[in-house]
Length: 275
Image 1 (cartoon, helix red, strand yellow):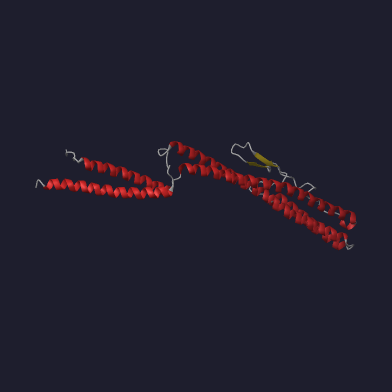
Image 2: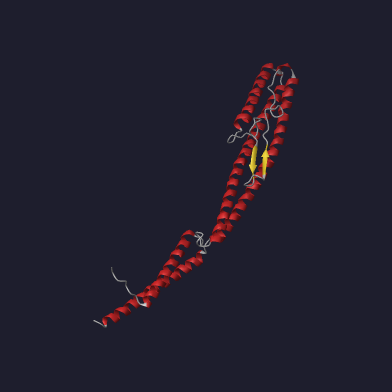
């Protein structure tokens, strides 16, 4: 077995100092590369776990915000559909008005056919095309109500009930017997006009929900940012301070290496006395 190398006290002190400085340099470099002064519980257990809790809360809030965003798209799909449905109904009104202004039965018949084609398109639009990811707020089919949660445990939420727009309130019946006289034509025109009014009211209701969801979305974003900032304040490094510390440590490292060289040279000088 080889014998242990004996070092002078000066060399041992310099080696200990150099080891400490190297460890501090490694820590400073880690802080600079991660941007954090607390990278694990070993650095500061209290700050680390409090920051972790804040980050988790921020993540949950961001997930809620995303879910609200999807709910908002459901509402916006319904609002866009209502706008198109209103346009179709206004065209139906116009057709009825044209039919009232003529006595040509052939023309009246053509106008009635066009009215009924639009009526069919209105049904297709509201019942089949107003669907966003499986939810249609303009359908009376069960399962289309929309629930939007504003907090993680669901104790704060809103439910937006779907409206059955196949009812005559929103969808006029198919036109019949327009050629028989103005009474039937006027009934169709009135039904289309009433449906426009009904859709306007529904649009106002859904628009209010849209505004509320957007407001809560913005609030949730701000709240998530607060938790994220709080977590970062507990763990983030002062980059200017860390850079200055690293520079100072590197200077100390060079000085320690120089001191170690000087101590070694002193030992060699003593050794030469015996040669």
